[in-house]
Length: 185
Image (cartoon, rainbow, N blue to C red; front, side, top):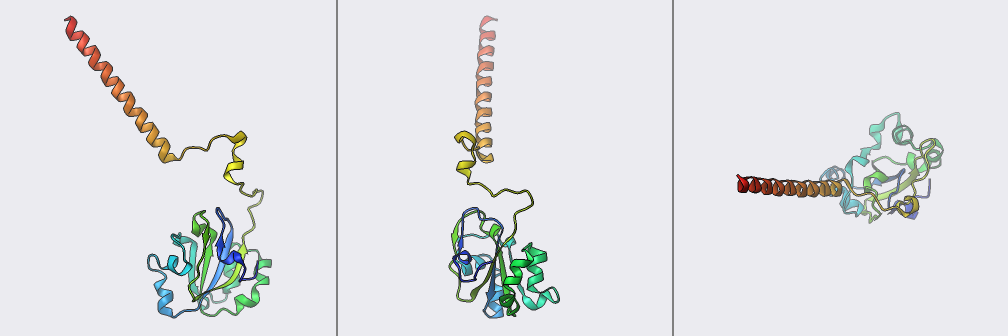
């Protein structure tokens, strides 16, 4: 866990994985409700696009006995040690909170420009899965500098073009055979 005012709270690295940002929403209830509208989350975070399924917004009081610490540990997989370090800041929260997982940014880098009512509280990292290795950058991951795999859409387009070419060739051959057969009869 890091101090809430560090660059991790406002910069998202390309292909960032396992990061969880907690923000206090210090704004009127109407504005918090407005965040469910299309484009509103992107506006308050200052980003072009966002996977809304990776963002949780709720009132701390709605967590009842679990509390925000329990939600982060049990619901988000944040190690208890990290949450314990941030306990004073987390326990001080009493209004609306927004939790943003790194998957919300779709692997794209982003520099967040936070709306005045979006206040950084904590930054956490999920531990990697057992036996998991850090994800290498894609250039160095290719063995022997092998070319990158084509995207599925590109492969389908190439297959379609090859199929059309084969169909045209087959029709041309059929026309030639029919023409020859009628010429000799």
